[in-house]
Image 1: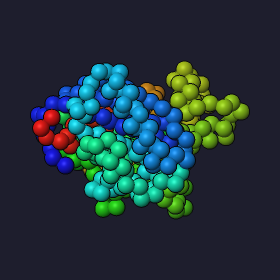
Image 2: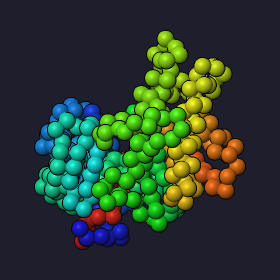
Image 3: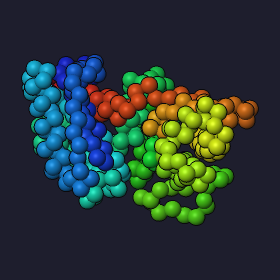
Length: 312
């Protein structure tokens, strides 16, 4: 696809989730003109999702009065292993039946403009790099901590994919306090089994009858609840181990925390305190995502802007 960062026109950023589809229409500067969302069943075939995308684009253009001829590129983030060279979603556990899906080709056929695809966590990292907490930083790691844990790694200003497109699967890290038994790829990893959203809830259920979400546990810890503080401190310690190890290997000083759990201020603050107390030469700095839930959408906008057709 041709690159032309100076051309005008509009782009569409798409975030395909396990149960929701979101998209936005943006101008050549990345300014949002319209946002659209719809629920999608987990068993939705790719063609049904493309139909929904077309519907969302049509409704967004109609709502803003923007001509279809102004649309010059789209980009989509999808959960799972994604080959960005071929535009193929290789596999995902979030969308049932999606295996070797030619998502880029489907988008280009459905919308008639150049398309790009990317893994959703790496897409969020692109969003933070262009519009958020990683702006102007050539080396940083975006950590998405929600139900699971994944990373989007920026090195020398480029997102890292790895030889098999699976770079950033940090949920499979083994650190003190996690299980050492092998975890099958596609199943929850050793680290995310303990400090992913469900892992944190499991920690809590082991000591309490209350049914709380991870962020509720951390908020309660910040108000002085000793049981919740124990879960927070253990979770922060394991995250600090993982971040310290990643920082040593990659020599990155900035870590941006995103996802429903990663955005928790008590979690971020407790992890930073542990890292600071180690008083090591390498002392990573943590910050929470400034884009929040829109990180993937804005990453898709940034990717689409980089791949617009010329002459618009």
